[in-house]
Image (cartoon, rainbow, N blue to C red; front, side, top):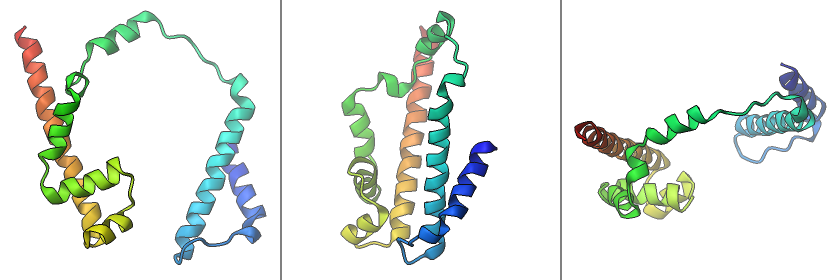
Length: 148
């Protein structure tokens, strides 16, 4: 609560220095406010980090985590790339450009001559397809371990 109050106090005190970075004034203001609030929270944490209680984790927690292996943990690079390559060409192109190359949807849309909405939709569908493939791989791994 204290961090939020401090953050909004900073926003109200410096509202006169706000300059919109986009044509959409409201989105620029929201982004500017979000940045101030996040930086206030980080400053608050740094200032009070010695006051936070931390405890050590005993060995039983790490043993449980190491026994719960997922399919992606046991997959090779080639298998993961194979999943990406099994996507349809449109989904794969958007997935590679956004996730691997770090392009924004606007840039992808311009490069592929598609709309921004299509780029976002293709990325969402590509992610769903990869998640489905990973769930299937997890199920196979689970069945293999159960058979042993």
